[in-house]
Every structure is written in structure tokens, then in C-alpha cells.
Image 1 (cartoon, helix red, strand yellow):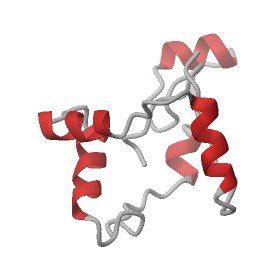
Image 2 (cartoon, rainbow, N blue to C red):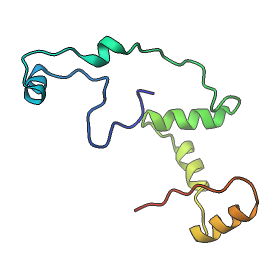
Image 3 (cartoon, rainbow, N blue to C red):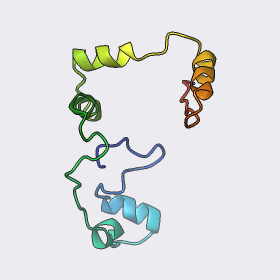
Length: 106
């Protein structure tokens, strides 16, 4: 998915590299762009993850494009846990389904 966040400590692999950067890094005048030569880009056009949930699909689409609507923002805010995260974790864990995965802010 080319709309995902870029690498933390690097450049996206699909962006063109300048000759100056090639010369600096590889110490050669020219080099083959391995990404262009070896990788064929195939766009996935069928969304299976949110299949059948149009509201969720539209929300994720707006987040991916950085164009959040007021409706999307309100919906996301309405799903924020209003209890201590430890309490919510214990509640989810006690349900006996898959163990919960929690992402915590720094």
C-alpha cells in the first residue's frame, strides 16, 4: 500500500534516487535502480479487509488520505476508552476470546 506511512529511518523504496545520492552512497557514477528493474507494481483493487462495512471503509479511506471529516473524527473519538487501560485490558482478557492487543502512547 503506497499510502502507508513512510519508513521511520529511511526513504520509501519506490521513490526515485538522485544521481548525487547514488554517487555519495555507492561511490559510483551511475547505478541500476533495483526497485524499478526487479519489482512489478500491481495495484490491489478489491478491498477484502473492510468488505461489507461501508462506514468503516470510508473512515479508513479518509484517514489514509489525511482528510478526516467531522463525522470520522467524532466516530473515532466515541470509541476512546473512558476507563483505565488496565481495567479494559482485564475486561477483554476475561472474555476468553483472543488475547487483546493494546497500543499505548509514549
